[in-house]
Length: 390
Image (cartoon, rainbow, N blue to C red; front, top):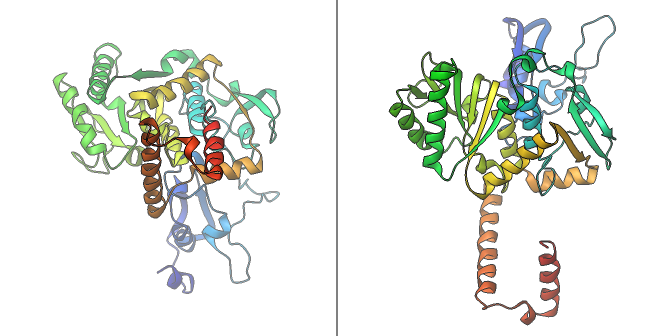
Protein backbone atom coordinates (compact mmCIF):
# COMPACT_ATOMS: atom_id res chain seq x y z
CA UNK A 1 0.00 0.00 0.00
CA UNK A 2 2.75 2.47 0.93
CA UNK A 3 4.65 1.87 -2.31
CA UNK A 4 1.48 2.49 -4.30
CA UNK A 5 0.84 5.74 -2.46
CA UNK A 6 4.39 6.99 -2.92
CA UNK A 7 4.30 6.44 -6.67
CA UNK A 8 0.82 7.77 -7.35
CA UNK A 9 -0.89 11.15 -7.30
CA UNK A 10 -2.84 10.97 -4.04
CA UNK A 11 -5.21 13.73 -2.98
CA UNK A 12 -4.04 15.37 0.26
CA UNK A 13 -6.88 15.57 2.77
CA UNK A 14 -5.26 17.03 5.92
CA UNK A 15 -4.50 20.71 6.41
CA UNK A 16 -2.29 19.93 9.43
CA UNK A 17 -1.44 16.84 11.49
CA UNK A 18 -0.25 16.28 15.06
CA UNK A 19 1.46 12.91 15.60
CA UNK A 20 1.59 12.34 19.35
CA UNK A 21 3.35 9.43 21.11
CA UNK A 22 5.32 9.12 17.88
CA UNK A 23 8.04 6.89 19.34
CA UNK A 24 5.78 3.82 19.17
CA UNK A 25 4.60 4.21 15.56
CA UNK A 26 6.03 2.33 12.54
CA UNK A 27 8.01 4.33 9.92
CA UNK A 28 5.43 3.56 7.22
CA UNK A 29 2.83 5.56 9.14
CA UNK A 30 4.88 8.77 8.82
CA UNK A 31 5.17 8.46 5.03
CA UNK A 32 1.43 7.96 4.68
CA UNK A 33 0.75 11.03 6.78
CA UNK A 34 3.22 13.04 4.67
CA UNK A 35 1.50 12.14 1.41
CA UNK A 36 -2.00 12.85 2.74
CA UNK A 37 -1.09 16.26 4.20
CA UNK A 38 -1.55 19.38 2.09
CA UNK A 39 1.29 21.76 1.30
CA UNK A 40 3.16 23.30 3.05
CA UNK A 41 3.09 20.04 5.09
CA UNK A 42 2.24 21.29 8.56
CA UNK A 43 3.17 18.15 10.51
CA UNK A 44 4.02 18.23 14.20
CA UNK A 45 5.76 15.15 15.64
CA UNK A 46 5.72 14.91 19.45
CA UNK A 47 7.56 12.24 21.39
CA UNK A 48 9.45 11.35 24.55
CA UNK A 49 12.14 8.76 23.96
CA UNK A 50 11.94 7.42 27.52
CA UNK A 51 8.29 6.52 26.92
CA UNK A 52 9.31 3.96 24.35
CA UNK A 53 7.40 0.72 25.05
CA UNK A 54 8.35 -1.08 21.86
CA UNK A 55 11.43 -3.07 20.89
CA UNK A 56 12.80 -0.11 18.93
CA UNK A 57 15.50 2.05 20.57
CA UNK A 58 14.52 5.69 20.32
CA UNK A 59 13.25 7.60 17.29
CA UNK A 60 14.79 6.72 13.92
CA UNK A 61 16.25 9.58 11.82
CA UNK A 62 13.54 11.60 10.12
CA UNK A 63 14.92 10.68 6.71
CA UNK A 64 14.05 7.05 7.56
CA UNK A 65 10.55 8.05 8.66
CA UNK A 66 9.54 10.40 5.83
CA UNK A 67 11.83 9.18 3.07
CA UNK A 68 13.51 11.04 0.19
CA UNK A 69 12.01 13.12 -2.60
CA UNK A 70 12.48 12.44 -6.31
CA UNK A 71 15.76 14.36 -6.25
CA UNK A 72 17.22 12.23 -3.48
CA UNK A 73 16.85 14.89 -0.78
CA UNK A 74 15.19 14.26 2.60
CA UNK A 75 11.51 15.22 2.47
CA UNK A 76 11.68 16.51 6.04
CA UNK A 77 14.55 18.40 7.64
CA UNK A 78 14.75 19.58 11.25
CA UNK A 79 17.28 22.29 10.46
CA UNK A 80 15.97 25.72 11.44
CA UNK A 81 15.60 28.25 8.63
CA UNK A 82 16.05 31.96 9.31
CA UNK A 83 12.77 33.81 9.17
CA UNK A 84 10.70 30.66 9.65
CA UNK A 85 9.26 28.95 12.73
CA UNK A 86 11.64 26.70 14.65
CA UNK A 87 11.46 23.08 13.53
CA UNK A 88 13.27 21.22 16.30
CA UNK A 89 11.85 22.19 19.68
CA UNK A 90 12.63 20.64 23.06
CA UNK A 91 10.18 21.59 25.80
CA UNK A 92 12.11 22.54 28.98
CA UNK A 93 9.04 23.21 31.14
CA UNK A 94 6.94 20.29 32.41
CA UNK A 95 3.40 21.42 33.24
CA UNK A 96 1.89 17.98 33.94
CA UNK A 97 4.24 16.33 36.46
CA UNK A 98 5.55 17.61 39.75
CA UNK A 99 9.33 18.25 39.65
CA UNK A 100 9.81 15.63 42.38
CA UNK A 101 7.94 12.86 40.59
CA UNK A 102 9.65 13.73 37.31
CA UNK A 103 13.09 13.54 38.94
CA UNK A 104 12.24 10.15 40.46
CA UNK A 105 10.95 9.02 37.06
CA UNK A 106 14.24 9.96 35.40
CA UNK A 107 16.25 8.36 38.22
CA UNK A 108 14.39 5.06 37.90
CA UNK A 109 14.24 5.23 34.10
CA UNK A 110 17.99 5.61 33.78
CA UNK A 111 18.90 3.62 36.89
CA UNK A 112 20.79 6.60 38.34
CA UNK A 113 20.86 5.18 41.87
CA UNK A 114 20.72 1.52 40.88
CA UNK A 115 23.31 -0.50 42.80
CA UNK A 116 24.59 -2.06 39.58
CA UNK A 117 24.85 1.25 37.73
CA UNK A 118 23.07 3.02 34.88
CA UNK A 119 20.70 1.11 32.61
CA UNK A 120 20.63 3.64 29.78
CA UNK A 121 21.43 7.25 28.94
CA UNK A 122 20.74 9.92 26.34
CA UNK A 123 22.89 9.81 23.21
CA UNK A 124 22.95 13.61 23.32
CA UNK A 125 24.30 14.59 26.76
CA UNK A 126 23.11 18.19 26.33
CA UNK A 127 19.51 16.98 26.49
CA UNK A 128 19.70 17.06 30.29
CA UNK A 129 19.93 20.84 30.28
CA UNK A 130 17.48 21.18 27.40
CA UNK A 131 14.75 19.33 29.32
CA UNK A 132 15.11 21.48 32.41
CA UNK A 133 18.04 20.23 34.50
CA UNK A 134 20.95 22.36 35.67
CA UNK A 135 24.44 21.37 36.78
CA UNK A 136 24.91 21.59 40.55
CA UNK A 137 28.50 20.35 40.43
CA UNK A 138 30.81 18.28 38.26
CA UNK A 139 30.92 18.12 34.47
CA UNK A 140 28.25 16.99 32.05
CA UNK A 141 30.84 15.25 29.90
CA UNK A 142 31.58 11.58 29.16
CA UNK A 143 33.71 9.99 31.85
CA UNK A 144 33.01 12.69 34.43
CA UNK A 145 30.76 12.68 37.49
CA UNK A 146 27.94 15.21 37.65
CA UNK A 147 25.12 16.28 39.94
CA UNK A 148 21.95 17.58 38.24
CA UNK A 149 18.81 19.21 39.61
CA UNK A 150 15.68 20.51 37.96
CA UNK A 151 15.76 24.27 37.53
CA UNK A 152 13.00 26.31 39.25
CA UNK A 153 11.90 27.74 35.90
CA UNK A 154 11.43 24.24 34.45
CA UNK A 155 8.28 23.65 36.56
CA UNK A 156 5.27 25.88 37.23
CA UNK A 157 5.22 27.44 40.70
CA UNK A 158 1.76 26.06 41.51
CA UNK A 159 3.23 22.62 42.28
CA UNK A 160 5.32 23.96 45.16
CA UNK A 161 2.39 26.12 46.30
CA UNK A 162 0.00 23.19 46.70
CA UNK A 163 1.94 19.90 46.99
CA UNK A 164 4.65 18.73 49.35
CA UNK A 165 7.51 16.63 47.90
CA UNK A 166 6.86 13.91 50.50
CA UNK A 167 3.27 13.61 49.27
CA UNK A 168 3.98 13.95 45.55
CA UNK A 169 5.50 10.48 45.36
CA UNK A 170 5.22 7.75 47.99
CA UNK A 171 6.36 4.15 48.38
CA UNK A 172 3.75 1.61 49.51
CA UNK A 173 5.52 -1.76 49.88
CA UNK A 174 3.48 -4.80 50.84
CA UNK A 175 4.14 -8.41 51.83
CA UNK A 176 2.28 -9.98 48.90
CA UNK A 177 -0.17 -9.34 46.08
CA UNK A 178 -3.28 -9.65 48.23
CA UNK A 179 -1.99 -7.07 50.70
CA UNK A 180 -1.08 -4.80 47.81
CA UNK A 181 -4.71 -4.89 46.62
CA UNK A 182 -5.95 -3.97 50.08
CA UNK A 183 -3.44 -1.10 50.33
CA UNK A 184 -4.56 0.38 47.00
CA UNK A 185 -8.28 0.04 47.73
CA UNK A 186 -7.97 1.50 51.23
CA UNK A 187 -5.90 4.44 50.02
CA UNK A 188 -8.34 5.22 47.20
CA UNK A 189 -11.31 4.99 49.57
CA UNK A 190 -9.57 7.40 51.96
CA UNK A 191 -8.85 9.81 49.11
CA UNK A 192 -12.52 9.84 48.11
CA UNK A 193 -13.85 10.18 51.63
CA UNK A 194 -11.31 12.54 53.18
CA UNK A 195 -9.27 14.21 50.42
CA UNK A 196 -12.05 15.38 48.09
CA UNK A 197 -10.88 13.25 45.16
CA UNK A 198 -13.40 11.55 42.87
CA UNK A 199 -13.09 7.91 41.78
CA UNK A 200 -12.23 9.08 38.24
CA UNK A 201 -9.30 11.09 39.60
CA UNK A 202 -7.50 7.74 40.08
CA UNK A 203 -5.57 5.59 37.59
CA UNK A 204 -4.20 2.17 38.61
CA UNK A 205 -1.48 0.85 36.28
CA UNK A 206 -0.03 -2.64 35.84
CA UNK A 207 3.38 -2.95 34.10
CA UNK A 208 2.47 -6.09 32.12
CA UNK A 209 -0.22 -6.27 29.47
CA UNK A 210 -0.19 -10.08 29.62
CA UNK A 211 -1.21 -10.42 33.27
CA UNK A 212 -3.04 -7.15 33.94
CA UNK A 213 -6.57 -8.51 33.41
CA UNK A 214 -6.03 -11.37 35.89
CA UNK A 215 -4.15 -9.27 38.42
CA UNK A 216 -6.81 -6.54 38.32
CA UNK A 217 -9.44 -8.86 39.85
CA UNK A 218 -8.23 -8.51 43.49
CA UNK A 219 -8.15 -4.71 43.05
CA UNK A 220 -11.70 -4.59 41.70
CA UNK A 221 -12.95 -6.83 44.52
CA UNK A 222 -11.14 -4.84 47.22
CA UNK A 223 -12.63 -1.59 45.87
CA UNK A 224 -16.11 -3.15 45.72
CA UNK A 225 -15.90 -4.07 49.40
CA UNK A 226 -15.34 -0.39 50.12
CA UNK A 227 -18.18 0.77 47.89
CA UNK A 228 -15.91 2.16 45.15
CA UNK A 229 -16.69 1.51 41.48
CA UNK A 230 -13.94 0.63 39.02
CA UNK A 231 -13.44 -0.58 35.48
CA UNK A 232 -10.65 -2.53 33.75
CA UNK A 233 -9.94 -0.72 30.50
CA UNK A 234 -10.40 -3.05 27.54
CA UNK A 235 -11.95 -5.79 29.69
CA UNK A 236 -14.96 -4.44 31.60
CA UNK A 237 -15.06 -1.29 29.48
CA UNK A 238 -14.18 -0.34 25.92
CA UNK A 239 -10.47 -0.12 25.18
CA UNK A 240 -11.16 3.42 23.97
CA UNK A 241 -12.77 4.47 27.27
CA UNK A 242 -9.96 5.21 29.71
CA UNK A 243 -11.60 7.47 32.26
CA UNK A 244 -15.23 6.92 33.24
CA UNK A 245 -17.13 9.32 35.50
CA UNK A 246 -17.48 7.92 39.03
CA UNK A 247 -15.18 4.96 38.39
CA UNK A 248 -11.52 4.15 39.12
CA UNK A 249 -9.63 3.29 35.92
CA UNK A 250 -7.44 0.16 35.97
CA UNK A 251 -5.19 -0.45 32.96
CA UNK A 252 -1.92 -1.95 31.81
CA UNK A 253 0.86 0.42 30.79
CA UNK A 254 0.17 0.26 27.05
CA UNK A 255 -3.43 1.42 27.56
CA UNK A 256 -2.45 3.99 30.20
CA UNK A 257 0.20 5.54 27.95
CA UNK A 258 -0.95 8.87 26.57
CA UNK A 259 -3.45 9.33 29.40
CA UNK A 260 -3.16 11.06 32.75
CA UNK A 261 -4.83 11.39 36.14
CA UNK A 262 -4.28 13.39 39.33
CA UNK A 263 -3.49 10.23 41.35
CA UNK A 264 -1.56 7.32 39.82
CA UNK A 265 -0.84 3.95 41.41
CA UNK A 266 1.83 1.78 39.79
CA UNK A 267 1.52 -1.81 40.99
CA UNK A 268 4.04 -4.66 40.87
CA UNK A 269 7.02 -2.33 40.66
CA UNK A 270 9.23 -5.28 41.53
CA UNK A 271 8.69 -6.59 37.99
CA UNK A 272 10.59 -3.57 36.63
CA UNK A 273 13.52 -3.59 39.04
CA UNK A 274 15.82 -6.33 37.80
CA UNK A 275 16.24 -9.00 35.14
CA UNK A 276 16.65 -8.84 31.39
CA UNK A 277 15.41 -6.14 28.99
CA UNK A 278 15.90 -3.46 31.63
CA UNK A 279 15.75 -0.62 29.12
CA UNK A 280 12.13 -1.57 28.42
CA UNK A 281 11.07 -2.22 32.01
CA UNK A 282 12.73 0.98 33.26
CA UNK A 283 10.91 2.90 30.52
CA UNK A 284 7.69 1.40 31.91
CA UNK A 285 8.48 2.92 35.32
CA UNK A 286 9.16 6.31 33.73
CA UNK A 287 6.01 6.22 31.60
CA UNK A 288 3.74 5.18 34.47
CA UNK A 289 5.05 7.81 36.89
CA UNK A 290 4.67 10.56 34.31
CA UNK A 291 0.95 9.75 33.89
CA UNK A 292 0.38 11.65 37.14
CA UNK A 293 -0.68 15.29 37.34
CA UNK A 294 -0.14 15.49 41.10
CA UNK A 295 0.46 12.31 43.13
CA UNK A 296 2.16 8.96 42.52
CA UNK A 297 2.12 5.79 44.62
CA UNK A 298 4.61 3.00 43.93
CA UNK A 299 3.62 -0.48 45.13
CA UNK A 300 5.18 -3.92 45.09
CA UNK A 301 6.70 -6.62 47.25
CA UNK A 302 9.69 -8.90 47.63
CA UNK A 303 13.46 -8.31 47.33
CA UNK A 304 13.16 -6.61 43.95
CA UNK A 305 10.74 -4.08 45.41
CA UNK A 306 13.47 -3.42 47.97
CA UNK A 307 15.72 -2.31 45.10
CA UNK A 308 13.08 0.19 43.94
CA UNK A 309 12.68 1.47 47.50
CA UNK A 310 16.45 1.97 47.78
CA UNK A 311 16.61 3.93 44.52
CA UNK A 312 13.65 6.19 45.31
CA UNK A 313 14.94 6.78 48.84
CA UNK A 314 18.33 7.74 47.42
CA UNK A 315 16.69 10.40 45.23
CA UNK A 316 14.80 11.80 48.20
CA UNK A 317 17.88 11.85 50.44
CA UNK A 318 19.77 13.67 47.70
CA UNK A 319 17.13 16.41 47.79
CA UNK A 320 15.86 15.32 44.37
CA UNK A 321 19.23 15.65 42.70
CA UNK A 322 20.70 13.14 40.25
CA UNK A 323 24.33 12.15 40.83
CA UNK A 324 26.03 9.78 38.40
CA UNK A 325 29.01 9.22 36.14
CA UNK A 326 28.29 10.28 32.57
CA UNK A 327 28.90 7.18 30.42
CA UNK A 328 31.50 7.08 27.68
CA UNK A 329 30.69 5.83 24.17
CA UNK A 330 32.07 2.40 25.09
CA UNK A 331 29.94 2.25 28.24
CA UNK A 332 26.84 3.31 26.31
CA UNK A 333 27.40 0.53 23.79
CA UNK A 334 27.78 -2.02 26.58
CA UNK A 335 24.55 -0.84 28.27
CA UNK A 336 22.61 -1.25 25.04
CA UNK A 337 23.97 -4.73 24.54
CA UNK A 338 23.21 -5.88 28.09
CA UNK A 339 19.81 -4.25 28.60
CA UNK A 340 18.37 -4.42 25.09
CA UNK A 341 15.07 -6.09 24.21
CA UNK A 342 15.56 -9.76 23.36
CA UNK A 343 14.16 -11.76 20.46
CA UNK A 344 12.16 -14.93 21.16
CA UNK A 345 15.18 -17.12 20.39
CA UNK A 346 17.43 -15.01 22.63
CA UNK A 347 14.94 -15.26 25.48
CA UNK A 348 14.76 -19.05 25.08
CA UNK A 349 18.56 -19.31 25.04
CA UNK A 350 18.84 -17.15 28.15
CA UNK A 351 16.29 -19.32 29.95
CA UNK A 352 18.27 -22.46 29.04
CA UNK A 353 21.50 -20.89 30.27
CA UNK A 354 19.86 -19.75 33.51
CA UNK A 355 18.63 -23.31 34.08
CA UNK A 356 22.12 -24.70 33.51
CA UNK A 357 23.67 -22.10 35.80
CA UNK A 358 21.13 -22.87 38.51
CA UNK A 359 22.01 -26.57 38.24
CA UNK A 360 25.73 -25.77 38.65
CA UNK A 361 25.05 -23.59 41.70
CA UNK A 362 22.87 -26.28 43.29
CA UNK A 363 25.56 -28.89 42.63
CA UNK A 364 28.18 -26.69 44.31
CA UNK A 365 25.91 -26.07 47.30
CA UNK A 366 25.27 -29.81 47.65
CA UNK A 367 28.98 -30.59 47.50
CA UNK A 368 28.56 -32.50 44.24
CA UNK A 369 30.84 -30.08 42.37
CA UNK A 370 34.06 -28.63 43.75
CA UNK A 371 35.86 -25.77 42.01
CA UNK A 372 39.20 -27.26 43.06
CA UNK A 373 38.43 -30.45 41.15
CA UNK A 374 37.85 -28.68 37.85
CA UNK A 375 40.46 -28.66 35.04
CA UNK A 376 42.97 -25.83 35.42
CA UNK A 377 41.59 -23.64 32.62
CA UNK A 378 37.99 -24.05 33.74
CA UNK A 379 38.88 -23.48 37.39
CA UNK A 380 40.71 -20.24 36.53
CA UNK A 381 37.70 -19.01 34.56
CA UNK A 382 35.34 -19.96 37.38
CA UNK A 383 37.43 -18.22 40.02
CA UNK A 384 37.72 -15.06 37.92
CA UNK A 385 33.95 -15.09 37.36
CA UNK A 386 33.13 -15.66 41.03
CA UNK A 387 35.44 -12.80 41.99
CA UNK A 388 33.14 -10.38 40.16
CA UNK A 389 30.44 -11.08 42.79
CA UNK A 390 32.68 -10.14 45.72
